[in-house]
Length: 328
Image (cartoon, rainbow, N blue to C red):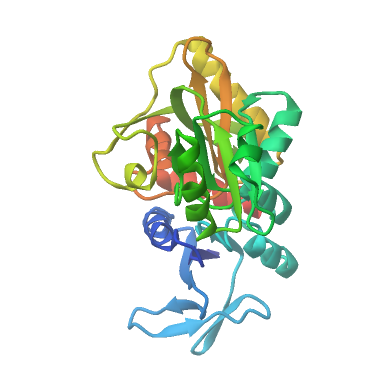
């Protein structure tokens, strides 16, 4: 019998549009012979499924069911494609855990930890498996002066939201005068900012997932942006960034990135597909952890689909593995 899968997309953040694109790719590549897929769009007003004739039917959140006319759908699993809140910060995962519903990503506590870049960096730094650049945690309700910040980190720094993705409100700050405007830009969308020291080097990204009890790494991608860094425009505007998959690395470098990514995935007790980003420092080949994305983008040209294809798998096989792993 086919399993009923709720494909959850949308969300409450500026990454809503990216999430919708992610859901299109996933929906188009889930094996319809094995699974019935119901795409549920989440926003602040409702969680709704749209029928073929355009009627929107709300999810019954009391038991996470879909009351279609004459037939209530009870789901076997949820495939989370919501970037940002509430799909990447643990809120949606917590709800699904309370419902006893399997889902294709990290649990609520892990999602909440990894969503906050400052807290996640502290855990990764303590593990000792990889270098982590120095950073400062700046709270909107307890602001720090420019002097207080620059006694803890050296310019240049990246100022970014502590909780947020797609490089929204992220600025490379080179002078002390640029620091306050950059922090204010973050505070327009988030109550926590992060000022992190710049590490000069090559940027890499790698997908890691667990299937059949084994943690596997996908091929490494090098991100080569024509802009100064991999910002929102560079991520989502064709031609601005060159993403090379598999990356041109010697075996020592490739093994270092792959093994470190698997260790991080294991240390954090991740589930599903995660994408982990690194900087390989120029001149030293020291590897620095940048961040982990527990609901990475899956639009057709996103990094993870590129890596899946480079690994020799189809997206149909890959998404099937993720679904079966969460059902198990």
